[in-house]
Image 1 (tube, rainbow, N blue to C red):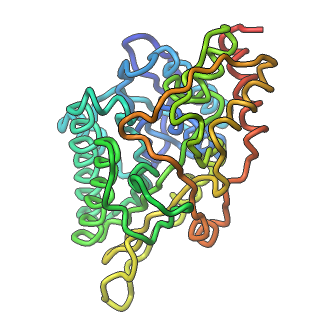
Image 2 (image 1 turned 60 degrees about the vertical axis):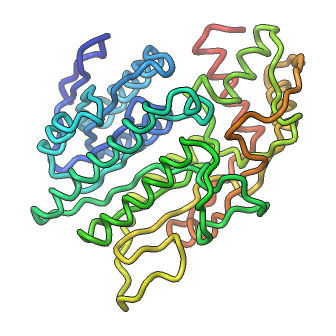
Length: 363
């Protein structure tokens, strides 16, 4: 059984690690913690990295870490958590010095479309400088003869205000309408260049509105649930007509783990790729989300049903940076790893509301 220390407000979480673990950044984040759960349950050792920044409650993030420690103890897998800011080049280099890693799953980022309007420098530091430092760590490992497979988080936001009802990953995504989206598109281009120059296998994952237990307080499912249970009004943007490909967190985490086990190969004919989702090196990009979009008013109805209460609604116009609709074409994902996210919204929202009540002691 690994030796484990409990999370504290300042100290790291450590469990004895085995050779060749997965490096998981954003390990205390929503999707990152879910991915960590799956890796550890399968007996895969994990080195987790997170800066535990206060964008939302660090207490929630530490609670996720506690669950990862418990998963490591249950499976016998090693878990080593390091609290660092990936924009700190020296600290990032020290993490990679603990390798080599077979897989690097990079989910750390400054999230949130609306937050990026008022805090642009946070996005440049976390999403651009931090990502560059991760790429450099992977490059150095590749040059030492052991290239890892880098799987990194992109976003459906890269599509911008796209007129197509379904978003296809093999079509251009060159008009982001928020800085957050622009940084995610930049990540894709940066990864492509490293795949081309250094033969570094890179897989980008465009997530579509992930929700579920242990989720983020800044996202709609959490905010609506919280306010409905408190008897407070909810703000409904875009007159409730916006549509999203809501993706249950277990589906998202399963997709990431399967993709991490399926590194892309470089084109064999040396020709330029025929579509934007493929690269001149070992590079691929996938949509990971529901192909059945749900209108915001329908989501609210489902949350109301799960809470057993009706919501008081305040209808407001769309906010800057928002888009009307996101629905994923997942045929390439299905072909690559045999997965199509399909958890019904009723099932996923029900699981979230039950978790929320339990976590907050709300009845």
